[in-house]
Length: 126
Image (cartoon, rainbow, N blue to C red):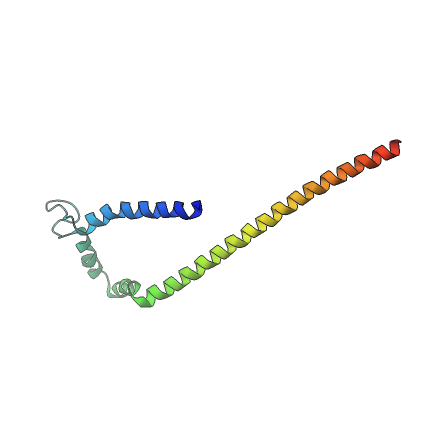
């Protein structure tokens, strides 16, 4: 149960903290007299202007990063890696459970052998 609610609370905190940052980036106008964004209608308005000053090949690459031709394979690869990681974690969990069971079995065997050794040594003494 805690494995579900803790990440949910973290996600909620991230969303709540992102709201003022996104609001300031997109809606609050920057200072008109000083700062790197002066003369812009918003901080975000500087981004397209900066990209347009780059060489054409870099502009094409940046625009490619925003297309579905990049996003869909990225999503698929991310999903595959996530499933692989979860599968690996589950297999490690099963391995740990098996090793704990083996440790308990070995402890029981040691107790049995110790009792057997005591019983045999007491029979020889008689």
